[in-house]
Image 1 (spheres, one colour):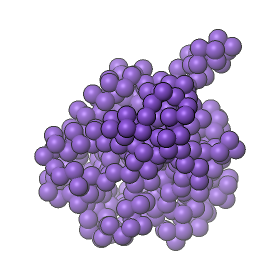
Image 2: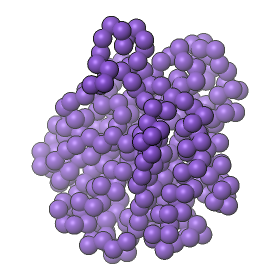
Image 3: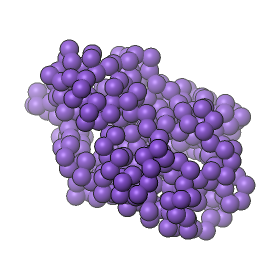
Length: 331
């Protein structure tokens, strides 16, 4: 895939709220158990935002760390993309709120809604702005406060999700490094298998929508699971093919942290070792657009990446969307 400029990640950061909710805490709220949650998802605990913490607060903290890591000032950023399904408000954009908090006065801003695929969508979008010469530095943030839209009486969903944010700074890098290829896609026919039916123009907020609990996240778990286990290996192989790489060339896979069984199934379909798939959902749960960024930040901070390593980011989620990209690490 020919690019005018090579674009890579030059800064990484993540943030999660201090409050931790364990499976044992959930046992006191809904009819569930630590054994049931762990055996089906791999999740043991998740971080939960405080009442006064919003998505922009989480994203701002992750963004500060990414900027520091990139050795850039807020005014050096030309564009801020925030991937989220839990914005502070329907408008203004959460990206605009973070821009103001950072003091990134020179940045254009917009929010991107691709759910759990959002950070990869954002990285690909930002990279293309830079590769064409339109912008020099792009800040991409995946941030979610999913606890704010959880139905804590629904044991099938409330046990899965957590809050947090991950951020990356994109800039031009040495030729041949950075984003090598990508694959973005969606199956809109499955949109209502994972949605928040109330609050938009289809079902504006009314007493009826509130009473019917339509403002909470709804999910048909089996359908989403089936979509994920099929699309993850498919998009992975498509992206590798575009980059003229094979699975043997991948140092590490960083998948969306939804469910251990999904990732295990994908690894088997790819005939790959599960050890090459980084997982931290046991400690953070499913943080939607934030999950890949949080995982990447942990990997980076633990010095598990070296220059020249090929990593593959892959997400899947509401929409139904999917996204993957191969990055040759340039730092």
